[in-house]
Length: 536
Image (tube, rainbow, N blue to C red; front, top):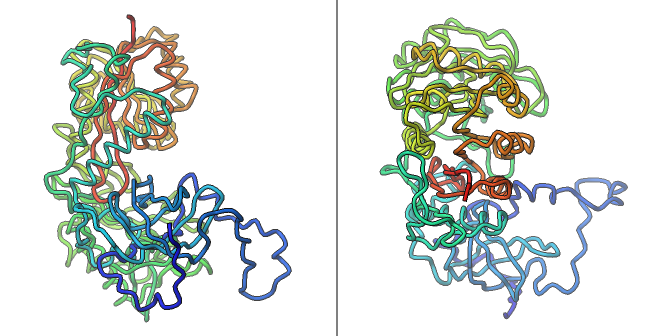
């Protein structure tokens, strides 16, 4: 492949092929590569940094311009191409495109490049409707058609299962082995056909779906600004509207910034640790319409607090709860330990299906209520509940999945390591009159064996772990308890594949995987997986 070295690239028309954000953004498993390895650079004075030496033998060097074909996309939403067999990650490039890129950084096995020009565009490329998409780090895929996003998310799951889990996946469209309504398997074992990965369940309207905004606050020209951090930085991009937020969240944030500026409220400065207002957090209950506003402050006292609350109540009548959370630590964690009510209730109420939930300032609650009901309904389906089963929810949080399952089960036990979440879960069970649900604080791998010793035997175990996946001891516990069915709710295909491999080796069979698009226009994908004990 011919390499072009440009001395006049500044005049090149980028048009639709401009890069969305910095291609040097590195997250997840590659974040450690940002650390400098130039140990001798410490004696240099001033801002100049010692440049890393070029790696000999690579087909490209820094600042080279090359034309490459984009053959895929990585988990960060960067296009993947190859220059003479060498992998380059290109922000803003889509699979199927031919692009001119400028090499920004090289490593031994891969490098990063900036998209300069589209030579052949994907038919799935669209104009991103957001005015700050090229600056904000909140979304990664607005330049891709929604159908293209959904197809890639399914393929992302398939790739993880095959590459990491070493699992065989059925050809797309193959009915294969599925779970019947009673949880019994139908069809042949996946040893022949493979695991069925269904098409991603998307949204009819994939915009304005978020019910929670957490907006960092800064100051520009004396006025409060708030939005999202620019990609790869802690520089705040001011935002008036976010197309994946509910419109009412936008309105509350905008008015709170204006009122705060009018009253002379200062913004927190990360570097100095001074200033008052750190974050504005807004929660919207889609079914009831109720809203909560949380002002996260660097200190106890809020100047003109009565005037501020009065103006918020006057201008935002849908807000039924105004809270203050106090966080004086120099940290990037949003919430501190103390929350107080400035006006109204300490919770708002919402529903998932027919189950009511009380949501406090610090409660975890799924941010896409429309798709949450889709996700949980699939969980119930894969659990195969008839009303006679005992179910254990191993990462129950505030009880959202537990109570959804409890509508169809004889007994449900939920366990969660965060005490405050269990307090909320118990309150939500009482709110719904569900006396056949028990919640306990602790690590699943400690509590569930204790339940077993007490004679509690689960027919179904549901796991909804964080991105790091299930604790190895929990997987061992599942294999020892031998429930008939396991339902795995995953937010990370890589750790899902790793855990499925362990369950498969321990005598379970993965039957069906249903990807669900909980976060349209981002790289994230959730899955629900039906798993049964393989007694054949």
